[in-house]
Amino acid sequence: MSSVLQALLDRPRFLGWLRSSVPGLDPRDYDVDRLIPRRDGFDLRIRVQARDGTWRATAFRIVRGLPKGLPAFALGSWFLVYHEPVEDSHILVAKALEANTSRHVGRMLGADIVDSSLYSYTPFRRAVIRYVASDAKVYYGKLYRAGQSHVAFETTNQLRDAGLSDCLAEPAVHLVDLEMIIWREAAGSVLGREYPRDEYRRGLHRAGIALKRLHAANVREILDRPATELRTLADEMRVTRKYLDRVATLLDGQPSELERCYADLDRSCVRADEYDPMTLHGDFHDNQIVLSGRSAVILDLDQIVRGDPAVDIGNFLAHIDFRIAYDRADDDPLPYAEAFAKGYGDFDDARLRRRIVLGHAVSLLRNCCLYVLIPNRLQALTAACRRVVGLVTEERR
Image 1 (cartoon, rainbow, N blue to C red):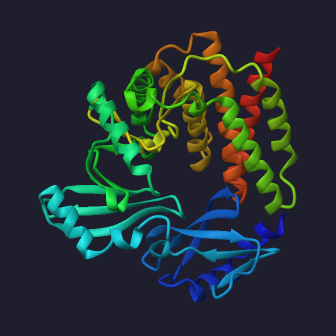
Image 2 (cartoon, rainbow, N blue to C red):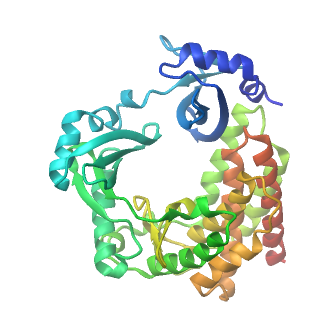
């Protein structure tokens, strides 16, 4: 076991540090969550349980050098530091939570804002503020880095105007000075939270229908982008390779099983270049879908791009495996994958099917990198990855 993992799993010592060093936290317990490799270190999400039993996600950074003036928890040769959202200089979290901003948002929406709170946060990249209006309606203000909110706002509106208004989240207001889009709450239940109930499988079918419609959409904001912005399976492999290399620096070498999976996929990816570009979501999974009546509404539309549809489909199938691993369930992913495929409608094309299997395996391997600090989840995801990589190698033969 690596020194990083040993330190994080030393619960009495780490809990003591959290209680004494992180402002506003008095945790009863904690769970290590997702690790995201970055150029200058790692983002680590840790779920913290308060004294009242509620859980909330908190953001930390893992860095090489001992930060000056900040409380740090030693992880071998690395250090863990708390990342305070309101001090982020890249996204305007503090300003979005100000009373003046709430009043401005209320005027734009035609109702007073009676509550605002930080809903989710990714250091240096994005955050979501939850606004509750006096008429009890809920809105989500998503903060972007400079220049990114305009593209998301224009692309979404063009897609909705192109006939997808019933299956895409609705932007209500664009606050350019804050780089924030206010989204209306999509009424219904999040698909990922329906697992393992029957509604999960029915919702997968509706998710397939919605994704197929998005893939077929053609709007100017997307078509005008240069061919160099096309998203391919080769791109996914490059990102996964970077993740593996960076995780190796943290854990004194990555698990050899993940390297073997990558080598098998790398040999197969050479044959995966032929495809017809479509409109991609870019991060499509079961928590990006709200089941509303008989429709599936797609959330988080800021990564839309043109590219290989197998990227979206493979990522979604990988997250079915992830859902089973997250719940530690002894479940067969195949019936769920089949429900989604029937909704999408044309996995019978041999070229697409080969690329989907590859995209599925690549996404699983990348998720293994994200959850290397959670042994049980890593074990389940690695087993799923080996299974799908086996299908890839069979196709290659």
